[in-house]
Length: 221
Ligand code: HEM
Image (cartoon, rainbow, N blue to C red):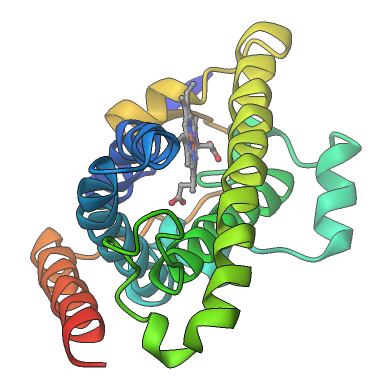
């Protein structure tokens, strides 16, 4: 028997589903270059805000969003891989999936930070807002890494989507629906404590603070 349990809060779901169009736009505008870079930078601030929000939410947010709740050691990862920790008994990210989540967030963070330090080598019209912190030589090197970084990020996303589809078709476990609705079917025999949720107003305040912090970073630093 399964019971429907609310596992993902709205902030996590909104954060997640904002990413595919935003990353798609960042990739396309970066590839186009030229005038597109103006919007590449502006939308980059949106990505930076959402990422900062997610990092803070990983510290103070709802239970399934918190890093301390889902980052597990090698023992738990091995137990999960041996099938000793069934997916339908885990309310949030499984120990293996958690590695993927951290890799995706780290790759996003690398892109955001390196983007802010990159220069527009073709026209120097649309430089990142923080290049003065590193000087032009370093900035040009960081631009090379920023351009390579998107390929690693896209590769990680391909593995991520591939894994989700493997769960769907190979293991007959739909992880996508819970990420859309927030509700996951959990084994009724699983001894779960109630999943703890933080009120959405706190998420909204965190988002506004994140936007303010990014604005201050790019205009005042
Ligand atoms: C730009 C593309 C994408 C990025 C950067 C991305 C990133 C992420 C991140 C960071 C998480 C962790 C959520 C959190 O705790 O904050 C996650 C989870 C998840 N993503 Fe994606 N994602 C992308 C596209 C997709 C797509 C297209 C699908 C569906 C086919 C998908 C399905 C899922 C699911 C089901 C989870 C939850 C996994 C679980 O149950 O543990 N993602 N994704």
